Image 1 (cartoon, rainbow, N blue to C red):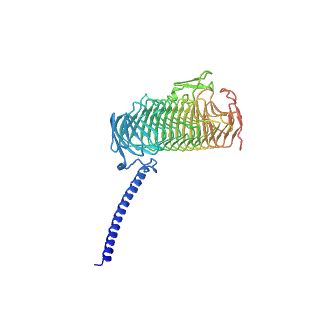
Image 2 (cartoon, helix red, strand yellow):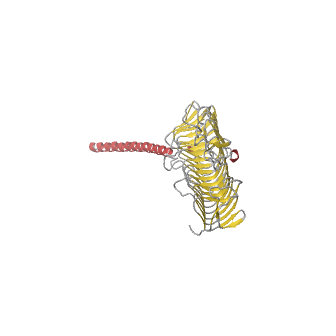
Image 3 (tube, rainbow, N blue to C red):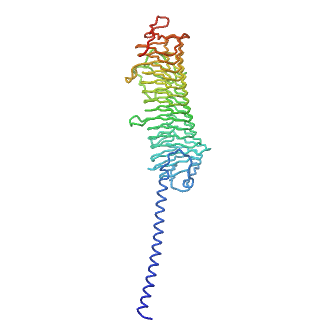
Length: 507
């Protein structure tokens, strides 16, 4: 064979072998790169699988969850991403963590991403600090598995003085799931979030030496059965400095509160959209002995008394109200039953009631607003020292029944935002007054009756200091229909002549 041809064939064979080797190497390199990319994608996916989760759905993918078995003083994990040391199960990575069993110790979260904790039949008793402590996280979700019973209990011993609750989170805390959860705060509080606290649903019982449920920025209750027994406040928020924070929203559920002080206390806006709420605050209305001889009052568990100059009253610990807000109170529906030593419903701003069923027994005011108290509907039954009190009381509709021992409706100058006025435009209003120097409708300013059905039983029907105008409505006083607004004129005793305001049309 020609020598050149042999060399050419050899070179061709070598080139072919080189191409095959390069192809094989390239294929392997491609496989390795693809494998690495897939692993990175999986890691990215695993690190963001809670990105869009808001807590509404209580189900979870068990195949990607880590299971932690609790057994007395020890605990074990099937994936070992948690650390278990000195009685603390510590979560440092995003994920779904399913806990079951009994444990003498603490669950702790310390990460900068979202974490979901599944309580699948646990009994956790902490010997130092909270039973569940979120030191840091983007959000922490707590799911209570349907059909299970769970308990989280802290101790009176806290080495770290910052946390104050059996369940304590420095960041957002969200509850869901329809199982049973019992939280006992032996140190101070039951459940605390230093940011937003949201309860989607569940069966939650809280017993606390101080506050039951507390969220700094907000407390939102969507649904569920919540029972609270607290020595101080039942549900509260604390942020009064950041705009749009410090509010409470209740849109459903069954809530029962027995509080040593305020039942529900909002630092700003308090909105009730729906739900069933039962509150006993400060031992209830029967515990109080209200004196009307002074405006400077204080309450000590079981009795009211005159405040001395040396008495240093703390606003929080000296408050025994059913529902209280420093901002507006808006009631859009629901059933509310309150038995309170102090005011039943109290706001330092305005209160608007659109509808709902409200029953209040109070040792002081049943419903009090420093500013405007407006009733647009609903069924309201009040048994109190005073029924309705505000700077401006405006009744447009609804059925309101008042049984009072002092004033049925009182308008006093408590806010510069409004002129002291009582205005009745509609609805069904029944007022029954106790014996003595009492006024059914008492305005320290103006009084306008423009409509509605009003039935008054009592010694003094009206008392006003400004102008009074009657322009319409069905008015009955002690069984007699009238179109005249009489005036007790500064609270004269019964039996003395009363001034009369003749019927006036227009305002």
